[in-house]
Image 1: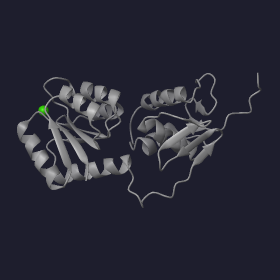
Image 2: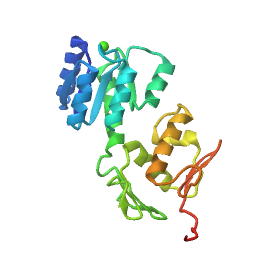
Image 3: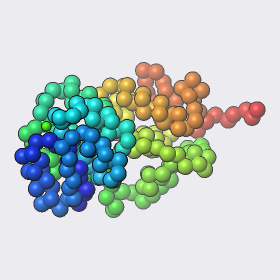
Image 4: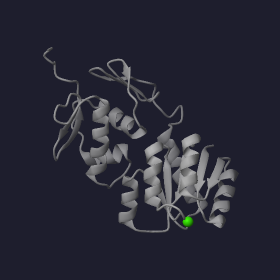
Length: 234
Ligand code: CA
């Protein structure tokens, strides 16, 4: 059971979605415009948002970008455009998954289940909490908490996933396509997405690409996380 925000302007599609989701015992709220959706997610914590891309007020990818600016909630975009480059662009813009219209209830349920599973692992499916430690970093994958030198890091979902994945294999160079597959669960995409998230993460770790401490980018090869070299004290 999940709380779902349906963003769909087509009254017919909308009521069908609400009916199916309610039947599957999800809690549903629905709005017909992108601006209403933004207002909703700013106030209510949803488990998943189903976002129609053909909305009357904002272009779908614009809406997605604004949504991503305020929340980490998993977003499944529903698009009538069966255009691979457009879909890749949306996935890179922060969509967690997509559905091409018209889609079946079964298809929607499967996509939702997958997105929810990723966003909040079911207890019992996850291994016992093991805190990953790399230098002054402590990452608790189960509680989704990360600290640097005892100070809690305020990370987005993706930043956390990225950090936890790298911290699980300290010193190992991970190729970008492996990060895409493991952290983004995508088999395709561009390096820019990863680079952007890496630079955000780097900033939160208080380091720069020019003077890395934990995060090391090997151009054309990949990324690794390792404890900082012993620093000469000033
Ligand atoms: Ca529409």
